[in-house]
Image: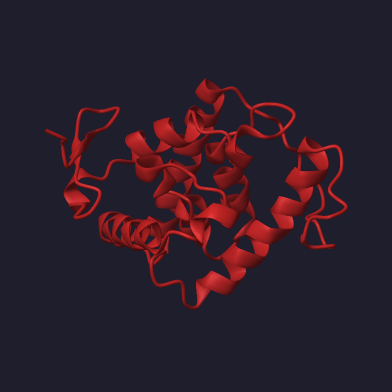
Length: 180
């Protein structure tokens, strides 16, 4: 028999088709994203989704939490590259359900991205430009922004460093949101 749930790093059960916000855990998200390579692993060296998320958060000045968590569903369902992702509407539906659970858990709105969606998407696209130039030899055929963010450094952190930095960014964002 196939289980209809997955066990997380911290031992929680996640029912991906009906996730409970109480089972969502920032430590699980940080750990899983730190071990997943962007671009389905097709870059010159390991570069985690966690590091990418920290960068997006740092440049989404008014929406740092949404920037940090914009790819958080991938901690539970993995990252599917865009050309394939759009061929699977059920995958997109499951991703939406997980994002809604994440919204409820962390009191944000990544599943319904207005008004911040345009800002996070723009920062995400601009950082993609930086990442492409840092991690690939030839990006001439890519449909990427010609406006990369200045001063972005792609460090290619180890998974351990990426997890630590992701959690550190979450703590900083959480403290600053509590003050406002």
